[in-house]
Image (cartoon, rainbow, N blue to C red; front, side):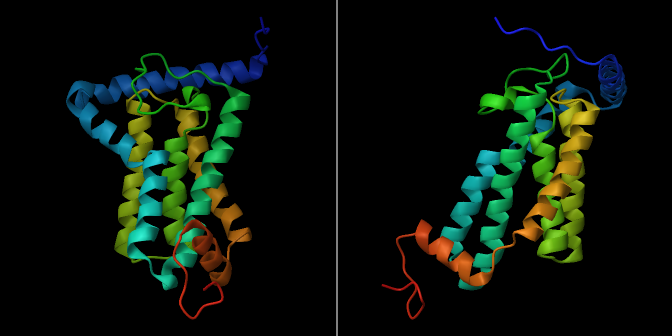
Length: 212
């Protein structure tokens, strides 16, 4: 059997404080917003930022809208989603922090490293989406504000559902920003985005370089 990892005392102390602080937040908020009454809303936020749902939705969006002018934005966003999932999976596999006491094992499609807590993949994804449409593909200010409110709501819901500790959520928000920065460096241009979409689709582009 594999030996249990020895966690440095300094790190263990931080994790213990984080765990206690998370419990205090949950217990305090539950007095005003009982989990039994609001769990449906929290679960709705959970589904609204699920990785599989976002990838399926975004690929459907590319297919049904099918606008060459949007390919660059769409492809880069999709790449960002995959980068986020990859980084979160690697970190979770390495850190392997347990979820908070009180968490119910009822998440939809909990695969591999998803059983671990640090960092929060839902939060990193929500913040990446917010930063993407604020920094890399700026949208209307009102839409960005709504995305910001949504991202913060997702973050708080992860704590109140006892899916994650406070540090997991903070790390997730930072990771969302880092993912945006990585994407800004490897940003795919319009012609490359058009080529990628052509490879993913049976359709060809009339009059374009990829038409056969």
